[in-house]
Length: 140
Image (cartoon, rainbow, N blue to C red):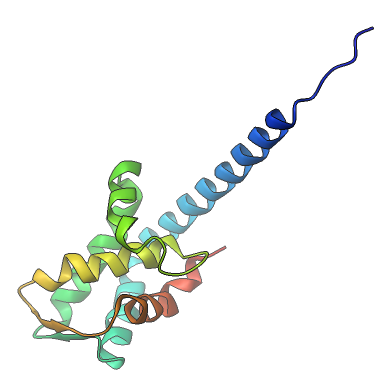
């Protein structure tokens, strides 16, 4: 009987696929939790950004609604769209929270143009840490 040869590349590929599947499951779980708890998370996030003096706004309610909408729609983003959004801040921290990364990039790139935002202060890392201090509850 012939001996079955197990290629090291095959074992490595299986391991990589298993890790990718696990990350994808974690990401989906985080997006679902963000969607289910969007209202509460948006309130906490806006409050944290105001407390740390990262945003200056004319209408807290409008900014809360904006974050709530972003949290609800994250799960329906296509993978390409998500990766393009995260590309500028992907290397900001090791082992990042994908929801925090997405919201950080949203604040830096899109929220700055919101009609109720007067100004956004701080560096990307500072903004990420403020956002992640609220969004870390989503991490499994």
